[in-house]
Image 1 (tube, rainbow, N blue to C red):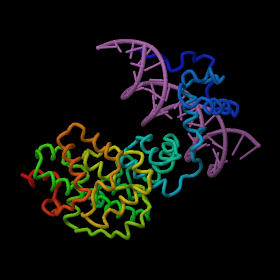
Image 2 (cartoon, helix red, strand yellow):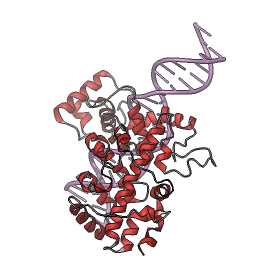
Image 3 (cartoon, chains in turn orange, purple, cyan):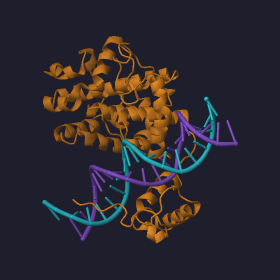
Image 4 (tube, rainbow, N blue to C red):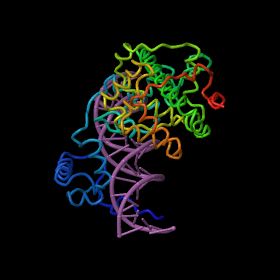
Length: 326
DNA sequence: AAACTAGTCAACCGCTAGTCA
DNA sequence: GTGACTAGCGGTTGACTAGTT
């Protein structure tokens, strides 16, 4: 496919910093006609700019909902958590931080956070400790390693650990329920592929018998939520997707964060919103059998309290889930 | 005061994916 | 099925500023 240049008439088009007059024209035009049609916008708006440049200027600077100024501690923490989850997917990270643009976050990451992580001995790419042989990072889940960013992040680390347990619990519920009824290979393919982070979680849980302090969970302001853990867990590949609402809807997040209150008696479907469910479904799109079962399970789960036996009490590694059910 | 260096961030570039005729 | 168009993404660049020599 032959691709036409972004801007047909690059000659004569202005580049570089925008002037207040240009901004005014662009804002005025977008306010009157709305966003979109970027290719033809410059001509209509009387701007000697590439449409792409106009879109970028609007998206990164002129949009009215953009929050400017320093990133606060919570935002920074969110960025780190989300980066551990998404990697350099700046747009995905930006969706978790309302009012912040992907460009702004990318710049902030590269100029501030990245350096700080390195200084703390954390690899900003893998989120693992740069020091080998310490025994600390190797035994922690990926996202727990992320938390080793500042002194006060130790608490956050614990909270993430606890939220991981929520994932494990949900998985246990699914495993217990589905293990008796559906094709084992389908189940293991979905929840056991690659032995991702949960491998470590289950192992960790087995040896330490961590109990969840719901009150301490409640004190968390972290934007990292069990929802993302859940999705990641089900995906099992460490590249889980998450919906914007996952990180922006605090009420949902709070509920998720506190879901340990009633331990396993709380229905997963009560805190899994539609959007999350869609994402979950996307991650399992190839496994229609599983999705049918899961849907049924979620519906039943509204009122049904399942007596269950935690999988992690029976195995050291999540990869062995097939053996457990065999 | 001038030259140099490092940090910051807006803007650009190249590419991809989605949509539509 | 193909190609053109469009929007959006992530990496990179370069102008500007602040600090240092």
